[in-house]
Length: 178
Image (cartoon, rainbow, N blue to C red; front, side, top):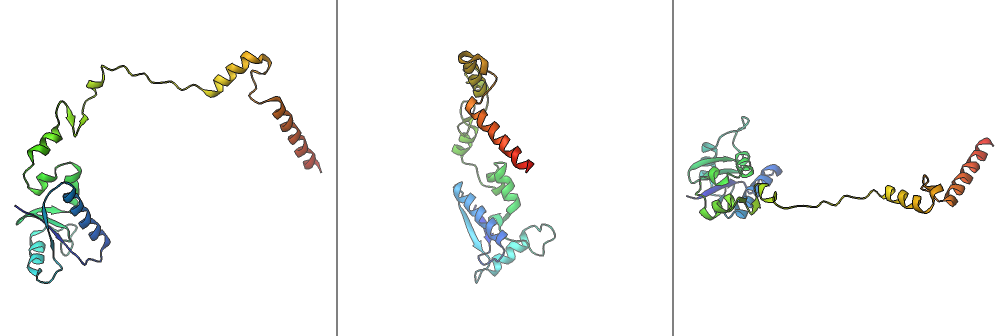
């Protein structure tokens, strides 16, 4: 059984090119062997007719657009079907290829893990976790100033800064009156 991806090597449609590249990239990253069939190459007219005849149309397109995916002569689906099956982690089922037992065991994991990640929070219940509580900086500053200078506990500004602010306000008022 050979997975065949029917593509167009000279398509001017950027979306078609992007979809073809994504299908091939995903298949390669998952180690699934496939054959890319470029229906635009000379001598591939029969493959093009096969793809168009055996693929399903979406949205009343005149002809199905690449990429179209087959397993030998059996139609699997188009890009949207491929992408959905990849998202729900059922790509092997979509492609009608046998699932590698090692991959299936890794997917199911051992001792409650999936792909090496714990699938349940129960394993972490036994651990005590301390979460540091952030100290409010203003509260800490106010408490410190109350201990050292009780008369200025309500103020966070230094007295020199108050005088400068008051002088600036008086100058602004003087300019407004002129």
